[in-house]
Picture 1 (cartoon, rainbow, N blue to C red):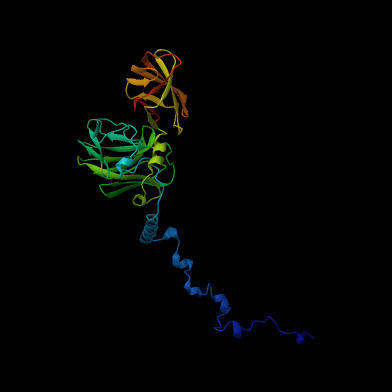
Picture 2: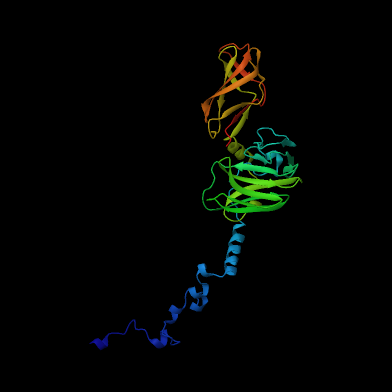
Length: 330
């Protein structure tokens, strides 16, 4: 009876292993290809034991791919190719000269040899920096600095890309001679800096700090002015005409301040002039004015003293531009 059962499912070697190698013919094909089409581990080797030239080729390939991408810029106000788009709340004019390191255009400090002057100009194609002698440049202190991984700091200067790659766990790297890029700690803050070591005028078009080991600065679109202004106002903002105040007495007025964007810390008030004009039922003026801010990083009121002729309880409005700054810089 067993002999009468059909031999269904039997594999006949002469049919399924025509090359007589002991492997079913169809199993030899992977994705339609024979096994010899695919590399074996012995062909590739261990990446840790690749020859230096092989590793270099791999790195070059990765870098070439990454250089075609775009990484976010971790710096504020770092696109100088369009002078009108530079955030400059302090109103620094072209040709500004400083003998010391100061904040000038938003988020950037002048960084110079204290004994020598550096001139900053707004050129048609970027920010000009010219050192009278010694060295000078620009620096940006970072509030939210990366603490691990590899990062690249780069700048387009005089039409040439300069780049520095560093480990964010150390923040200690520098490169360059005539043009020097540095990642370091300054005033207890992680900082990126560009220095110039000759007396020629150098034009900086763009500056960038990004994650990775390759600069993608050439791929960057212009930074949006409105977005950049909001970021800069976290650290510094100016006020003037249109501010409304209420007289507390004949000499002191409370001026209301509302921040559209929260500042980094409770700001320090800076009177850009000590002669301040308001008007109401009659014009009033503060001379040798002083100011105290009452509030926090979200807003508050400014007590301005030095007026004469205020009427307690009356409302006044400023008709003078740019007399007040609130500073929360690093």
